Length: 174
View 1: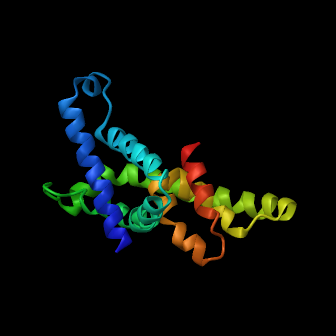
View 2: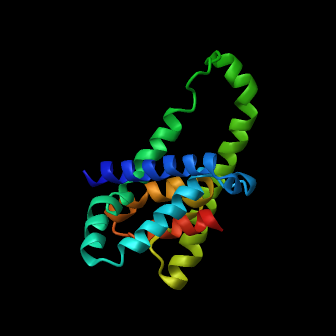
């Protein structure tokens, strides 16, 4: 239930940000996205709620608690909606148009895995004793991005390295 409440709360902030952007000309002139406006409103609400201990406890349990689980769900929504309203071409057309790019992308992706594994195995583990899962940070953060890094948090936690998601997010940021 906290996941649903969190999703509804964040959706309400996004809709509120959209309405504020439509009604307040300054937001339009500054080109502020609805998500930024809604996020700032949410930040303000969290700060004000923090002044009351009972209200803060309620908001943390009923709204913020579910944020941890949203990344894995929302990345599915992003990819599931990619082809909505688009006619799917034949396999031959797809291969002719995208084959070279697919090959190049695969070479880069597998190179990231190879570099991560080699550097971690040859340098980082022997010299600094980093966990072997550190080898996944480059491809998760760089190729996957913030959504993948956040979505991998449960896997890293289950494998005994909860800091992996933080390293992935840092890799995606820098």
